[in-house]
Image 1 (cartoon, rainbow over the protein chains, first blue to last red):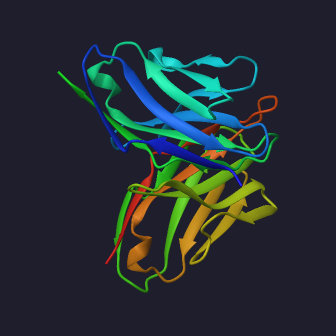
Image 2: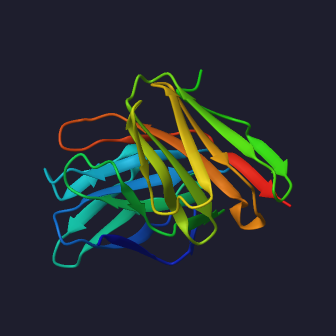
Image 3: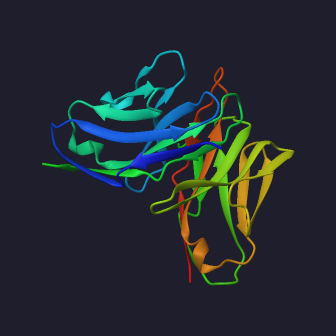
Length: 114
Length: 114
């Protein structure tokens, strides 16, 4: 069975500091991996997704994530946090192929301090 | 206009009442999903539909039912609401893009069961 674990339910950084949100997955087959962001009172928006074409994936708003098979990780990073990055972030995994079923992590709330 | 809309956005109901949450999409996608979000648990899949004649149970379907009235409409019903169904409910749609699909989320319905 597939699963996703996000380490840290809350992360706090200062504006301009590095953002690192951790995601580890478990999958018996090659996974497809996603990061979604949820701004307050809004639905989820796709940040980026791992397609197996490249291990370093660039997404919107300056975020990127690196797929590391040896570490079963897909951590999300951004070099310099902005106040507008404050939101909840979800890592998700799906089976290869067009199954359409996403398994979400518990979510990490990012707080950005002035 | 939003591509995925949900009505109502907020709802308060009493234990034992039947309620329906509605989802409409203008994206022309065949696949639609219902999730619930609970703090610390991420999103969990309730039901999903790959086309009008296809309905599938997700991870937590007990106490819920769905209806796919048309390609663009997918409704979630709580036959007899109970307090532990208090949650944030999201509808999502998806397309197929090569080996992967991307899910697009509505703004959510916040449900409180008293």
